[in-house]
Length: 425
Image (tube, rainbow, N blue to C red; front, side, top):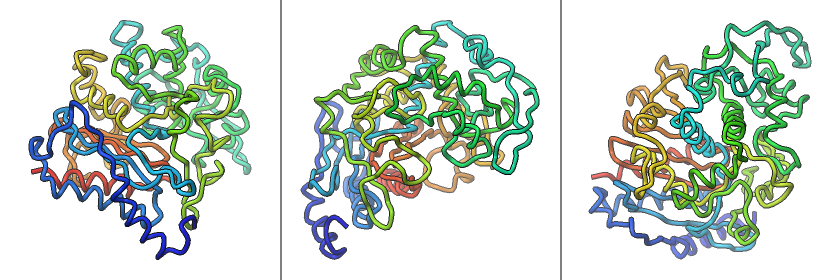
């Protein structure tokens, strides 16, 4: 390991981690007690994160908690790069992977509110290449699709938002993975010289895993939505986000590809392979052409499902807008009724018989069934490199956790969530 023998490493981490806690004071920041938190119990967030650092789960992290729009916790712990002894800072930039999906889903709702389409419209009305979908029904011994049938109906825009279209991911080893690989379907992260439109047109020729609307299947749905935004707006997804979301919300460090003057703030991506090592881009399910994404390569592919990088503070501003029912700082991005629809459960994510996935988010729904501390109204998602967020309308609370390590470990985000909720008065 990078810090020598394990006992030496733990001593160094214990010495440095206090020094590396870096709060950011902003006009939104208040004392924990003023926002309904017990200050001493809020410090258990530090304990949870430090424990994961000491156990080689992560190199470092930035976490932020706010209530009623007031930040009560915003700290950096550990390292952005272990070998270089580069201390984690609250302005470090992280690859947020599937946390991009919420941004794209909001982009779709912006165009919906402006009357460009209805959510139940067929996708092919705007992207003709997705007309007449086929469903895969038989595969050969190598996993190639050898028989299809016509789908019972075409996929709708709302099917894409709810991941109920029948589109899959190629990376996770599902039945369609060989077909996606043969067609060079990109799962979202690439340094290749290609475009979202090129890949989505190839995806449109792929069979579906099931009939649209039948069930939940996590897949490239949000990348298709990003392409839909490009076609309808006449802008690249990068430009649309900049004009309609990032600049209005003051998200100054959110990008698909980082400008050169911000590249040094990108944290190193690690892989947990019997200890933490800088990722080569080849470990696990999520394959990167280059672990230096998003500072390397052609910078032409704007993945609506996985491509963004941002700071914890940037993402806080985005989710605080949602918590405020579509508005932040006098700027309205969405109407209240659109946000209400997005956070309403539509499909069964976990097979528990409860509609617990809405239009871009997992919804807690039934607290007893969830079995972890939360609120029934809370909605959330995360990213493949161990980042996560949630929004709790009942408690008027938002929280975001940023780290960059693979593979994804659900427990890391859950420990953070528990530490936040237990600190409420």
